[in-house]
Amino acid sequence: MTFRVRFAETDQMGVAHHAAYVVWLEAARVEWMRERGLSYRDLEDDGISMAVSPLRVGYRRAVRFDDLVTVRCRLVEVRSRYGRYAYRLLGEDGAHVADATTEHVATDRSGRAVRLPAPWLEALRAEVQPDEHA
Amino acid sequence: MTFRVRFAETDQMGVAHHAAYVVWLEAARVEWMRERGLSYRDLEDDGISMAVSPLRVGYRRAVRFDDLVTVRCRLVEVRSRYGRYAYRLLGEDGAHVADATTEHVATDRSGRAVRLPAPWLEALRAEVQPDEHA
Amino acid sequence: MTFRVRFAETDQMGVAHHAAYVVWLEAARVEWMRERGLSYRDLEDDGISMAVSPLRVGYRRAVRFDDLVTVRCRLVEVRSRYGRYAYRLLGEDGAHVADATTEHVATDRSGRAVRLPAPWLEALRAEVQPDEHA
Amino acid sequence: MTFRVRFAETDQMGVAHHAAYVVWLEAARVEWMRERGLSYRDLEDDGISMAVSPLRVGYRRAVRFDDLVTVRCRLVEVRSRYGRYAYRLLGEDGAHVADATTEHVATDRSGRAVRLPAPWLEALRAEVQPDEHA
Image (cartoon, rainbow over all chains, first blue to last red; front, side, top):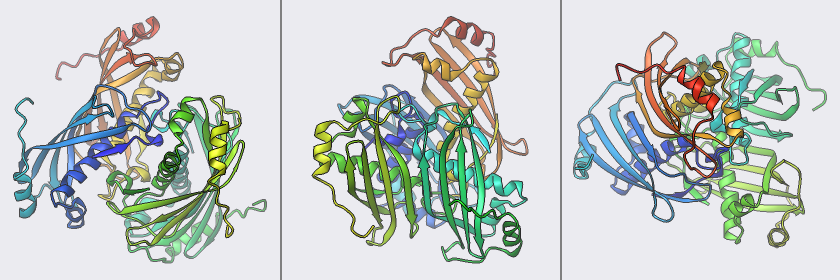
């Protein structure tokens, strides 16, 4: 997923605020699912969320307003109630601007851990790329 | 309501981003209700929202990171399904930094206009301060 | 400009929060400029901002997570230190979801009103579409 | 630091969005400094920022709109160009809702690592509480 840094995402240091990256990771994850025929919106509409915990972001280089940023997203591990993603953020020039990891538990509306629906689990399992270097 | 401008609310101009004010108005409205014994959270839990439209903000002076900002909130008009608030934002030195108006329609979860619950309507009516100068 | 509503932009009413629209308007404005060969980033780098005031948004219909939203942006008026834009937001099905107006003053870093650079002013003047129905 | 969850910080799961916590950590850090006579605003005005990397947040329990959340902040380590904070977030009932760690590098406006000013370094060193359990 590639997008431009919004003006509202900058802070007075003149760069994208570090909290904005967390929103970008989520948007990239949703696009990653869509490209695989999985609608996170439908999952949510069925009452299942992929709650995040923990989240880890390593910032290597600042990005600025209007920069094109690319988020590469990879599913590293999946289990019936759990998923783990790894991300690499690249700047316009291909520079490596950040890395991140998010872990997720599938939960119902009351926050209880639940199994992912079988079609999701199957589709996700086919996409796992374990991270040998993690 | 008085609060400090968060670093994340600044932009690269070095001042609070204009979208942050919209969030502050909402927070001030919720506090205004609380001070009058009205819990917006309870209203929401009962399935009723005060959807905003339209919103108007006039920005007079920038505020910066860590500034104390005070929002004065006033209910200008209320009807069974409708409310209108006016706001004045003041800076640390009492300077007049912005004005705003929000209008609201009470809606249920499906977005349909509904009557405010009787206790809300009664409490709100007692608070109306019509704006003779508007 | 067309984009998808981000999950982080929703609120507990299950729709995009009304402050998110303000960020979208800004992003649409920046794209509108880019399509006309004007880089808002360069203008900012030259120390000139287009400070917003006032802002007005009329919300007609909620949009939801993952919806495609299109923002149509039009420059209605321009003067040497001033510009006014009108916006229409459309949902996936072409439904009219919101209207907005923003007025802008060109300011330097100290917040003082300044003239837009001549090339900007010329380019903007060529794009004005006065709103006969406003 | 104790504050209320803003409506705009919720998402359609009905809880505070996970990116909001990152903003809260920053606000808590700024307050922690202020309580020790350190103005992060002044540091910024002197051209020095405490850039974040990495950031780690572990979410244990959701918080909802209007909840009072308390952030306990602790400086775990400090060096001339570096600081590390640990956080615990508590809900209204004292429940443990999240933990976090942020590491920081002091940078100048060009993003280069710089030494913290001597008074800052001295004040921060006096506040270090190493984390034996980390």
